[in-house]
Amino acid sequence: MRLTSVSALLAVSLLAGCATITGEGAKKQGPGQKLDPWENWNRKVFSFNEDLDKHVLVPVATGYQKVVPEFVRVGVDHFLTNAADGWSAVNHLLQGKWQSGFEMTVRFTTNTVLGFGGVLDIASEAGLESQPEDLGQTLGVWGFGAGAYIVWPLFGPSSVRDSAGLPLDLMASPATVINDGATKVEITTLQLVNKRANLLGASRVLDDIALDKYSFVRDAYLARRRSLVYDGNPPEPKTDDEDKEAPAAPAAPASAASAASGPAK
Figure (tube, rainbow, N blue to C red):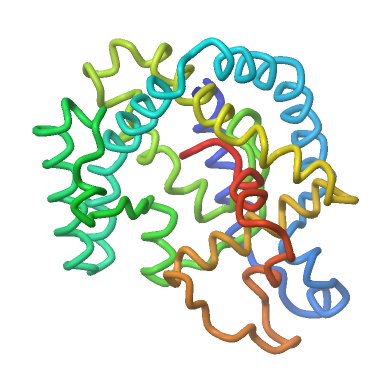
């Protein structure tokens, strides 16, 4: 769901976040401070998102999970994933991943034509698994650093680089593409509720294992995004004298890390 002020917020973040902490100031700061210079503000937004999740999204997602049959939810999942696969294919090609770009194009075409718009995931049964990519990952492959960590209202965890790619990701999202955006609100709501329902179990695990949930979500998000940029094989961390793009991934179940990443972009 878009915010009317998101473009202005993105512009401010890009101007402020593209400046790297250097010199004596950087030497006096720990890695966490370099990654999260706006922590005070981010924590307030994080608390707002947590309250919204607790009082609105979780009850709605719980009701959705109880009322809607599983086979319908699976079909919705497939449909929304397929709608996003077209943009993923574009990003694969922009990153120079010709084989995976071709495979994603075939996957999208197959499920759209033979899978009734993607409700049936025929391509996965044929061995063509979904490989999501977004513009933030593409910018990372092109050499742009992650920049400072940011928490957006409603959108959740992000970084300067991922925020720069967010507007185009939103323009290519299922809510905007399907029916030329005429049902944007309905599809966005369905997308949020469906994904939140899928992550109900993972969020409970996250609540149980995280002493400081904010720090855990931040570290999990940055580590996961770094791993995605390097296709699961990131280079060795830099020395202490160099800026670190992301901390080591916290020891947690994969489902909890996915829940920490917040809503889909």
